[in-house]
Length: 152
Image (cartoon, rainbow, N blue to C red; front, side, top):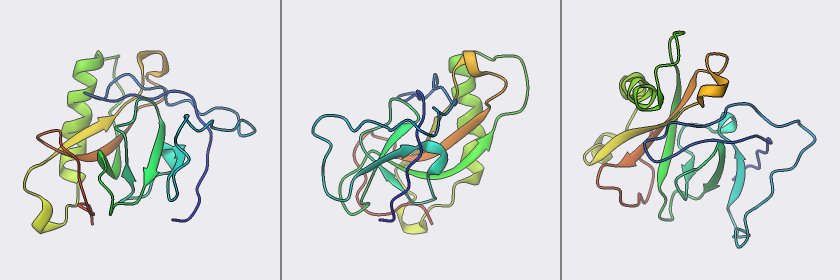
C-alpha cells in the first residue's frame, strides 16, 4: 500500500448521513485509534481514497481506516457523487439522494456484483451546501464482511 495521509474533521456511517467534510489544518496529525497499529493498515481522509480502497471498520467519520482487500473488510470505496445544490434535505433524504446518485456510478467486478449494495458517506447539515460530496462505498447487502476486491 502506498502511504497517503491527509488530516480531517469528522465523518459518518451506518445509513451514512451526518459527516463533516471540512478538513483539519494540514499541520494536524490524524491520531491512530488505540490498538490500530496493524501492519498494512493506515488512516486517511475520505477525500484521499482511490477506487478499490478497502475500509474497516465502517467509518464513523471522514477519517477512514484503509486496509488490505485480501482481509475481511466492511466496505470498498468506488467513487464520489456531488449532490445537487439545494436546501438541506435532511439526513435520511440526503443519504437516499447520495445512494441514488452513487448507484449508477459503481463499477463492480461482474462476478462479485451479487449481494452488494451502495452506502455513502455524506456531509453534515452544518457543512451544507458548501460541502455536497458523497463518498460512494460498496458493502454487502446482508451487512457481512467483504473479502477481496469488488470494485473495478
